[in-house]
Length: 345
Length: 209
Image 1 (spheres, each protein chain N blue to C red):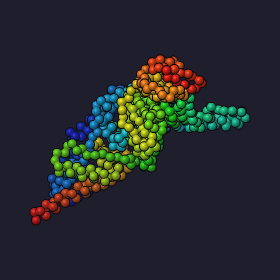
Image 2 (image 1 turned 180 degrees about the vertical axis):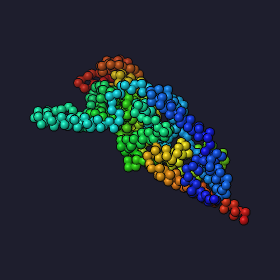
Image 3 (image 1 turned 90 degrees about the vertical axis):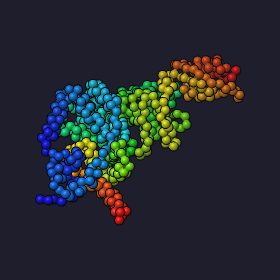
Image 4 (image 1 turned 180 degrees about the horizontal axis):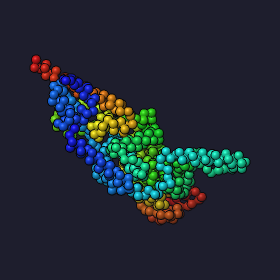
């Protein structure tokens, strides 16, 4: 009854592997086999070595993290009635197809009835259509998207997105600067594409500025969590931001800066119509005002005084701001159409 | 088969299914208990496909939210662990494919649905001495030589303690494929380990001789 046990055969036998993994318990038929079989006893050290070497490394998942995810799940379960009308699964697209078929049928039916159909809004819905919003000087509108997301768009900026977001993601393109307050929908991540980077969020608020100094894009997170990655590169770098952090992406070399702590008040000042100077040089002050109000600012004198200015203005007119800075720093000005001329005293 | 062992298995399984039924009846405590028991196993599994914590955490969250929403429609699974691992695996595949479509990242995922990149490494903190350490380095190399399929099967067997039947259910592959992958994977590892040991004994013979 003696049988030769070859390692190769043993390693193909699940019951044998289970017996080895569990430390060779004696209440197993393999124990009996082992006692009676010399060939198995001889190869045991090799097999043991192999089995014992497979100890898989565990990720250390802290109880805080587990708790945070658990709370988030429970919060969403409780909020759930809010999402009742949102289709959450691609498989529900059957319904959508039926709806689309019904609309098409309806359109044909109307055509058949020779009723003049000028522009059915339902039909235009099916064709992907882009919505573009562009701001000129001094415009800072708050735009509400169809999914409830609020976008505060800074002056001289543009967003572009599909009229109805796809089933899988809400993708929006940005030029300039905007602050996003993303309405939560875990089934459709919100992705902002701007100057070569993709900022992905689920429900959160963050600021993106593509006009950051030094040809870079700045992403600053206010609440929640976002992931910033190159929008084009394969396996490109990714940065995860936690609240009050920011990162710069250099559009020339495609590199991310280190993640830094952000001065949120400063970053977000623009959206509250707040102009804030902190030891800003004369040139910085005039460049900022010129961009903010959409005017060009010209120096009359060739020899200008150097100064630094610190101060805040909210909802002020350009004239009031120039008056108060001019009073302190000693200059006067003249406003013609879109041009400001500065005269040093 | 010892009777005490068999009894323990039956007991824990039926208890787990009791909890599952409570959860399906709308008991949130039972639902949270399922999370508490499996969160770590699930997240660890997710880490083997990606290091993207956003994908990992979202997948786990979505899995449990779906579970709660569809609780009236699902049946009591034979193995809760296998059921959850399978659902999580599908979520991650979906997410990584979506990502690949959106960012043209992970292009290689597009064609192969089943063989996701799957990697893990060996626990080194338990290693005491230098010879063991070199064995571990060897094992790491061996793992690198396995296919993603072989690695995933070995992971389920050695870390999640699942049967080949359960693994075949999770990975949605025939049992025969799982059987072959496990056998071939272990043999590949063995071949290299034994080769190394043989070299050592040969060296010893040479010295003594």
